[in-house]
Amino acid sequence: MTSAPPPSEPASQPGSEPPDAVREIAAGYAFTGPALDLGAVLLGADAYPRAQVRIPLGVLNRHGLVAGATGTGKTKTLQLIAEQLSAQGVPVFLADIKGDVSGISVPGTPNDRITGRAAEVGQSWTPRGCPAEFYALGGQGTGIPVRATVTSFGPLLLAKVLELNETQEASLGLVFHYADRSGLELYDLKDLTAVISFLTSPEGKAELKGVGGLSAATAGVILRSLTVLDNEGAGAFFGEPEFDTAELLRTAADGRGVVSVLELPAVQNRPRLFSTFLMWLLADLYQELPEVGDLDRPKLVFFFDEAHLLFKGASTSFLESITQTVRLIRSKGVGIFFVTQTPKDVPADVLAQLGNRVQHALRAFTPDDAKALKATVSTFPRSGYDLTEVLTRLGTGEAVVTVLSEKGAPTPVAATRLRAPRSLMGPVGEPALRAAVEASPLAARYRDAIDRESAYEKLTARPAAAPAAGPESVSRSERSERPEQPTREREREREGPGGMLGSLLSSPALKSFARSAGTQLGREITRSLFGTSRRLR
Image (cartoon, rainbow, N blue to C red):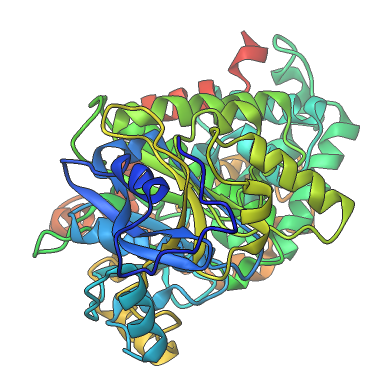
């Protein structure tokens, strides 16, 4: 590629004919098929509206990385890409950690900064919002509650949340194996606690003679970790009705993709749980979706924010599972964008699969910063830019971009001044957010927690059962608030089906059970990807 003009050469004005270096870059982004518009090529301080930087829609299932220091504009880049995907009929998933992504649901407000940016990059800016659904983990927030059963979450993911070592992780896998084999449903944390307590009792120890044992010391570590998790309020994330990840694939009546926004401010003090829960969503999607190969547009684009939390302290088997999922989910029509500060936050095996890159500014204030900057530069193709210089001088809303072309080849590296999102760049406010959630057809389906008969009740009902309540982490206050519903359900079961068929078929508990049973094979696949089946065989 032609080198950028030397400093002594006068810079061309943005409205004039671009210099040769800019035209050569722009030629690499002149795609014939549908594409997302990112912005205009940047050279020095000037942006060139005639030289547009774009991403072909058909390569977004080849995954991507959005990186940059805090305050450089990563969230606005996600918003810009998400609203264009929605307009193209592609559903999007976004995690809202700072609470400022909800504005994607309403039109933006024009101001001098937006109109100025639009003129600089050749954007015809008009305000427009996107169809959106708002979710919250376990209902800790305004959004529609998102829950998972402990069974479907799986031992490997749960071990990551509990920060267990590999020996403890293997023991937890043994507990899951026993529960699966014995018909002991693990819906919430009290179920898992009950099974562990039983397996360390005299009666329970005999159950594991054929497959090894569960030491009291290891069980104690796991139970204490579950206690901490439950005391932090994370127990609300596990239970029923379990969230159906197919909800993330919805489109609106006008054909636009629905943007699913997961509200996360309430779980900032539990970042490991948040990142692992996002991995569960991806694993569940992988189980449920059929193989489709390469499509003209993805079925879903999933933005995995704060990605470094997922990889930090991860075991070898966990990293292998992530790598395998990222590699294989592409053929299911799902694209993943990892969002973090530097590429070194992502393991090399995963980074090698991310074909689309949007790198915002990096700072080099410390020796560690300088090392991270050097590592970042080394991950880009060769270009005419001095990337070490460019990456430290980029302003907010500017980034270095390289993507895959329609033929699958990397495009030229392009310093880019990004377009302004058309939706509101900020939160919509609590009243508007609450109204949107209450108006959603999904609210009634997921709002109320369900406590069906499961491992806890079955073990408690055994005449000679060991203490099934487990440690104080069983959340007694929570159980005292919820016993009426399962009691009434059991009474209705004893009364027989006469006159009750319609209500039973519409019951959230029955629907959740049907999905749980219907996806048993899917859960076994999850066991192979995020479980301990390799150790147990």
